[in-house]
Length: 250
Ligand SMILES: C[S@@+](CC[C@H](N)C(=O)[O-])C[C@H]1O[C@@H](n2cnc3c(N)ncnc32)[C@H](O)[C@@H]1O
Image (cartoon, rainbow, N blue to C red; front, side):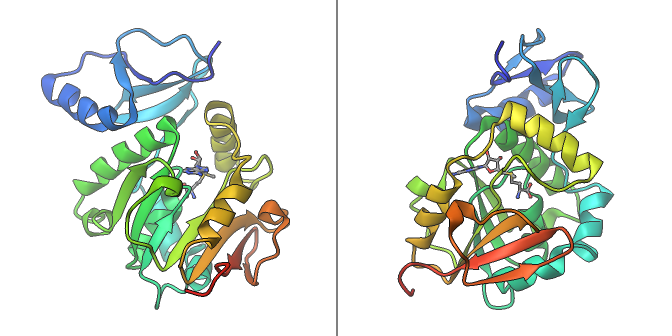
């Protein structure tokens, strides 16, 4: 059985506006609508006006969200200060998030005024993220932040966008943070999306570019990506940011 298929399952009837909305979100990622539950362990579903990733055997779900309280709390209090220092947000306002996932780190950076190009190669997080961006665009509190974020379906490897000041990476490893929420997300992500075994290549590609720095998010005690020692580090309670310089000075 496939882990996940590129369809969004629609259980309840939807109107024309919702169908148009869904086609608008999904077309970019090769995802379509299905009125039958896909035969796979995890599946995307449109429910309560948002797209979620669900497990076929229980009610657990994962989705991206910029409007709810948790992320706003994080922007205001937790985590933001360290990431701001790691990217040097005061001087570096143009950032590529090369591993966008559900866009939380990108949102934190954009909330602090950076303009963030996000890259995501897998249709599951890309779909969840695109849906969350569209929802947050309708909300007065988040609209201005979302306007500084844009999503690219693919990798930085074939991008012809103007080079940023900073490239930010948060690849997925088997061992990550400990909270129950992240554990659930981790399980879902690892089963549906897989681990990022090629993160050393991504770091090398990023270091080949004429940027000011490359910032890699890691668990506090996690190994260096590709065993490469960073130039310096910012260490928090459970997370660490390893800062690399490009192979050739910009
Ligand atoms: C741990 S998640 C990132 C979470 C994200 N920082 C957040 O705040 O939500 C890693 C994501 O990076 C994506 N990814 C890994 N390597 C990539 C690459 N080379 N290009 C694009 N996306 C990549 C994976 O598909 C996965 O969705």
